[in-house]
Length: 213
Picture 1: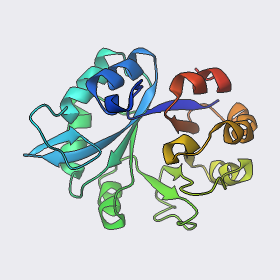
Picture 2: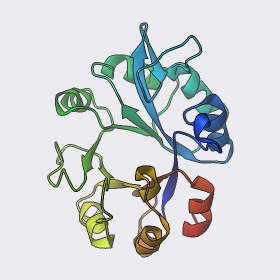
Picture 3: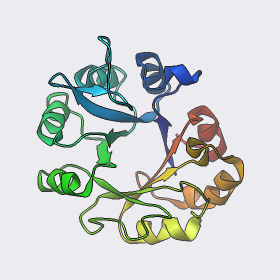
């Protein structure tokens, strides 16, 4: 079984990425999400790029929205700035959110998340064959920036090591996804619940293709 993470929410038009509309649509359709967290004027906010403007969605607002929709699925929090550990973990605790992981932080920053007990993923890609802090990480963000190198064997290595795996779908890097999804279908069907996720721009299509819950 594979879980679906809607990349920056369930957006229809690219301008909706990370918007309140896209994030609410993802939650109302029962998807987890991947989204980006930064700090701005003393608050944690949802923003992929350096944040500007007065109408930024705060992390507290995101977590409240998630809880209002029944906390459907995992929150994959892409950490875009250093030093957010205490504020982020405090927010998760206040809202009673436990189904999350943080990833993509710099290695020194990641070590601090681990020391504070945060659910942390490391990353493996064609450029990072030996993932940082692998022994301490709860899971692997399995990425392919330029070539579709991830097969079932690459996934099974991590599952056998007791790690959760989040697969990055090729369309996030501008490549077709269909053949890669076919390659992943058998490993997805055999994965234990909660062990495997797919981050995709097409959450509805992925749910149907993988027969995901």
